[in-house]
Image (cartoon, rainbow, N blue to C red; front, side, top):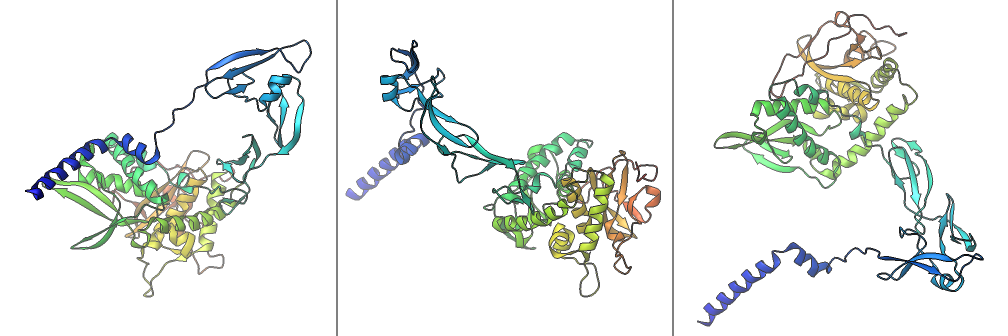
Amino acid sequence: MKRRLLIVLFVILCVSSLTVLSSCDFILDIIFGPEPEKHTHNLQNKILEVSCIADTQTECWYCEGCSQYFADADAQQVILDVDALLSEGHAYIRVYDGNAHWTACKFCNGIKGEKEAHSSDKWNYDEDNHLQICDVCLAEFNKNVHEMQDGACTVCSYIVDYAKYCNSDYGYRQLATLEDGEKMQKYYNALDSIMGDAHSNANFNAEKVTTKNGTWYVLPQVNFVQYNLDQTQAFTVLSSYRNDHPLYYWISNSVLTSSSQAGHIALKVCVEEEYAQGNVRVEQNAKLYKSISQYMQLVQNENNAYRVAEIFHNKIIDNIDYAYTNEGLPQEERWAHSIIGVFERKSAVCEGYAKAFQALLNAKGINNIYVTGQSNNQGHAWNLVQMDNGGWYWYDLTWDDQPNIPSGKIYDYFCKTDSEFPNHKVSDEKEGLDYLYDLPDRAPNRYNVFF
């Protein structure tokens, strides 16, 4: 009987505890204490008979709630020496310039003490400049343009986030031209929110999944039925996303789908096993960004699209070789098909050439498109680039890489019109994982270098 009674009492106690602890605020109050209320100054204007200037009165403002005096009605200038205020009428406040801070009277400008240089061991920064904020007076100082080397500022902690620059949105914009295009763009954005986090978050680890077909490392699933799309449309979106994001080298060619009794409902993007851990991706990003920055330094003073493309074309071909297996066949390892091949392994197949060229042109702000199709009846990838005259021209760095000639490169597939670009057939896949968007019309005439 006693045992039953104890069980009943225990159940009642648990239910009561759950009821009480159901309030998140209550739990936080227990752990951290109640959050202090934000103080709002209730200012009273005071006119003091004493004054540091003859024939005048000292005007200040006083808050009873915090017992502070202020030299302004907005409570921004705290009076630092109350005794001097009440006995002499000096309203001493913090004053500063770009180099130092000191204490001075608001009324007579009399300085109390010595000027002290601003101090801080922390840097604040944006994409262009860095600066420090004084620990004492909160003044900004030491604001200067970044001193960049290999994609990082040598003064502060700023590192160029190439994820903002190396990817593009041509595929995203082309989705709008398809049936259900608006829904597909929303699905694209849903994928992007996960992909962006996976790329830059060291704590974002891919989930290991084992199926009868093998082991995979996947990102959280994105439900395409929720967007009123079918699986083929979801694959079309994923294909566009991959083509738009050459920087995301870690995306696998594989994709898993989740199913319900009603059919497929969601897809899971797979990550290459060696990049399954977020910290590994972040470390790899730092290496890539350094290499990309070295390319970008070559064009930092060049804005002509033709010249920029030429510099990137030549540097990529000079730096890498086509990737072959020991058997003399095109390398099938994933690294050779991504920017890793160009920027780290110094060897790649056509996809690597084209994606690296795409990423660099994107970073420089030059419109370009990653293109897939066939060349000599084999799968191939190359680029379409918009020149300063507004025309679109073909580029194929893979075919221009000719190690058997003295210069190591040719320009037979550099800035060409349709008639000058033989043996290339653009993919006509208009849905699914091999989908390729429509391309803009190419320029009808050869590019005039002196345009």
